[in-house]
Image 1 (cartoon, rainbow, N blue to C red):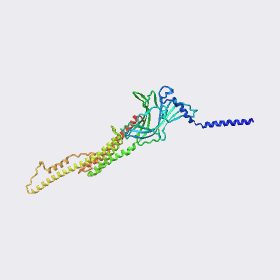
Image 2 (tube, helix red, strand yellow):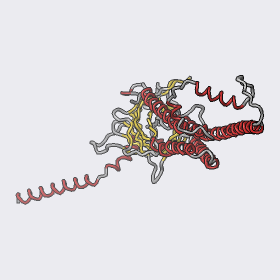
Image 3 (cartoon, rainbow, N blue to C red):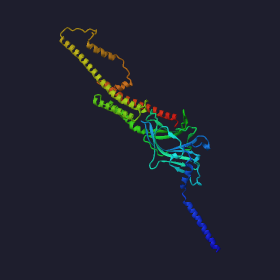
Image 4 (cartoon, rainbow, N blue to C red):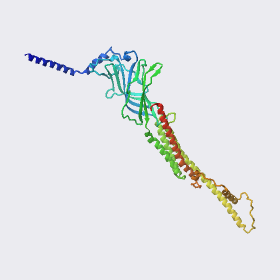
Length: 457
């Protein structure tokens, strides 16, 4: 009998323990969150209008630590001087009024979706133009309250921010776009923003931008003083480098091709007036259209940009090629006029010699008289002989290299026009090559110099 009672007692005790463990396993500690929230946020227990105390419960300013996660950068507009960014924004601070019992570590944190239930820093983005929250499918926001009273606020937002740009080196430029966050009403005596230690800003991997590359970013402080006090401010400077390959293909190479095409007129005959005029006018109009299209995609600024120098010089070269043909045409007509005048003068001289010869033939039976040794003025035959003697008496001159090269072209009709074309064939490419050397060395050097000044190297 004693053994049987002992067995039933053990069986009964084991059943009670199993039932107790089963009841504990069925308890959902998430359901206890309501009791805890009612306990710490109940009516008359917590006032969201009062800011938290300072560090260790002192009367100092509340410390709010901030970090960002940049999800994407959509557009960077040169005309509007702005950029759009989507980011996850996080704030973390300590409010000792929100401490609670974690039930032996089973409640790691409490979650809220209503920001008005607790005190929130009055942070705003000072260079914001537009912004909106994301509410699909549910509002992308949460508040986590930890047992020690630490509060984490996280929200996904999209912002359009102002970004003043300096386009003097466009399109070889680098732009710095800032994201500024400041307190609107609380001064530094009550609220201080600090960057979270470690890695305050994270950027999504494989961030792709259409015409820019995000090279670096720098976090800094930008506290501002006004007549109402000093306000805490944080900023992130994003360094964007413009992708030059797009502009090389779309602007620089086509402009070079137009300039080279305008030089084709130097190889055409000066008599091909319609061909040379059509070529010059067509390249000039195309270059002007290219320049207008470039300026249409940029804001009207008061200073000269690098692209303005390039298009202006290319337009000048194309216009110079058209003016060169006008000069060639004028020189051709001038040479033709001189040749006609020389021809008339030779005809007159030949007519005078023929008249004198006829006079000698008619007076052949007359008495022979010796011609005086003194040359009478107006005697054409004597003038011609004197000119020949002067030519033979002149000492020979040593020709220069340029004259030797130019002497390959005959000194007949239109010789000057041909020489102008030949000189242009050499001069225009050489000057354009020199301009390219100066242009690229100048602006690339200035680009590196500005980067050093900005302190991003």
